[in-house]
Picture 1: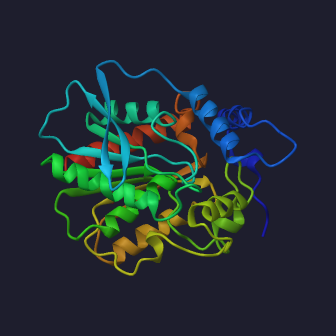
Picture 2: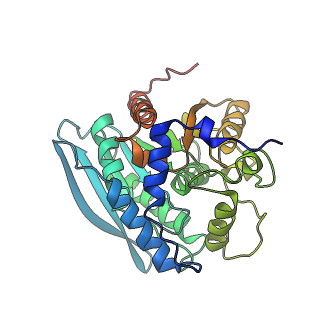
Length: 315
């Protein structure tokens, strides 16, 4: 198998975005601590953050999940109405890094673009809180929305957050009539790391298969590198909501997207994978620097609008 030539696969804007991202991760001469990894990640996200769009309000709150509370941040466009669907967003970060601030400007732009109220969820992180803590928090977030609103909702997330969104969709008592869609952005869904894009893009920029194994070990609390868990390991794909996936071609996780779509469609559901050619994992942060990413983000926003309107413009 020929290794991919990223010099040819990536355009100059994307390569500049990769270089800028990597500049936030200093070479310390030894493996960084979890605290250092988180600090570097937050600094990087802050470096790419943009001001909130005009006419958008935010409100931080929390709700109880057993003996701890789960912080959330609501984003509400001025024109959003109380009868519209809401979106529940789970941030990426390998279940180890990230939070409300790391994805703040991304979620703000998503809320403004879709004209939907969005609730971002600050779920518990590994390794301090390994599986199933994050999933339990995600389930509690959905239960909170079901109890405190009477409107439909869309599940959305990027990377590990997409895993949470899809896992919640599987775990809900189905069919759940108020769940009207999923948006999964460069998702990790439990594919076999010994095959496909996990091998062909094992050394992709910004996320390698080795990185995926490390994050998985933190999340699962195990040293077993090939242990699979997630939506692709499920056996029941019926009654899932219409699902739109955005998969980057230069990403070890790429194959998870089309594989999940095939499972949903085989069970009679609606699902589509939008292939984002020449993009890398974690690309959302570069939407103001890279035209390809801006175009992809516009497609993500359009998917949110379509799902909220119960429209399916995909063939």
